[in-house]
Image 1 (cartoon, rainbow over the protein chains, first blue to last red):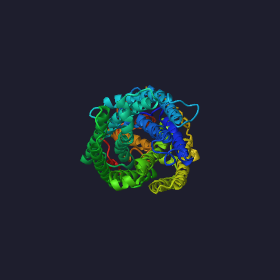
Image 2 (spheres, chains in turn cyan, blue; image 1 turned 45 degrees about the vertical axis):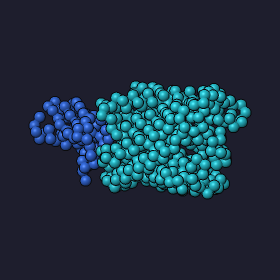
Image 3 (spheres, chains in turn cyan, green; image 1 turned 120 degrees about the vertical axis):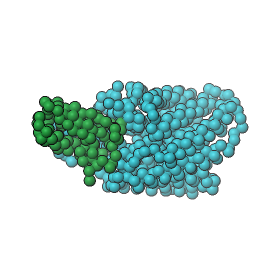
Image 4 (cartoon, one colour; image 1 turned 90 degrees about the vertical axis):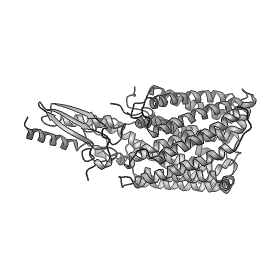
Length: 452
Length: 97
């Protein structure tokens, strides 16, 4: 039977990602990186990569290892690469952060750590690409959500390669004029490919499958959904063309980026209409917390993209449009990530523990593994804190920013406790908790058999 | 096997399958319309054709195995064969009210 099974290492990816989210927010609370340092300062670069690779990157890879097989209704290929990829990504990130710290004058670190970190990251993401691309390539015809993921993976490769060149220049290993020009002018493009192409485009694609699945809404590919894909592809192609143009030694031109912003707004507006339609047409009238929290993230996406496209708000958002980028990273990407973890963690835990005894014993529902009342408060605090932090960046008030991020960290920690409680089946009524023959899930290590 | 006996066994199988819930929706798989067909041949050979709410769902194999186990324990069933299909694809309209 073609289909997906439990991804063996997904929960380990999630656990590592959550650790990096706590570290990243802890760094901001302690005054590390922007707005306490310049946007291009080594401390800011270290912080940004802890969040972009450590939190969002590992979270996305862990989710894709589980859900790409669902998107294409075929088993994951080369699944044995999942653990080496995780170890390489963590090692690469730590080396990268060490290299950035050395550029900031931290003793005991060396700039030479940067290219070694990049090599480890290129290899790790290469393994990820092999697993996911070979799984997607085997599916014909390719469903629309999988096409989003395919483009996201292409953007991931571009992001990682451009970042690799940056590390060679920063470490002094490469002094080529073109590479230096790429570092000086290409950092925003590197960020756009990573945050917009890899993380956002992929998240949108997966949401087109998961939202109908969890809300029981029609999941046929609409014309608007296809238009989202095309608009996004054009926007990313324009960004990629700018990278190529700099690498080819041409003077940096601005108009393709303006056009890319317009296509991004168009894609976001169309995506918003799809989201609204899915919500209206859902057959499941009860709206669970993960869906509500996801829609808050969708609102943050719309607001941040529109604010980025408007010159007035972009220029008011501080260095590098930092306030808008913050809303994008924490309101949209992180908000969606936490909201989906709130569903995926109990879902995978249920499969691990109760799947093997289904039909032989009474079992709880997935929803019985969580208690929404407490988590609802954490999500409200989280989004409130994100809005407060964004406003404090607009207002150029670092102290208020620090307090807001502290509240955000508190809310995140509360949610992480809820995820751990779901893994431990704490919310399940005692008679149903451990039926005879049900395996007990580990907190973040696999108990299931490998996929291959 | 008489037609009446056959029909009784099919009903017994459907009843037995009501103990299996879809983990996400919390309703049993018969009410959800996930069981497309049940038939019993002479000699107690039961055939069940079923689907899942989502193609490629990670719970598919567990659901299929659960159906096989469940059918096997129905009195009179000597062998159970379960087929998973996505033709036609399940839609929420297939749920019983």
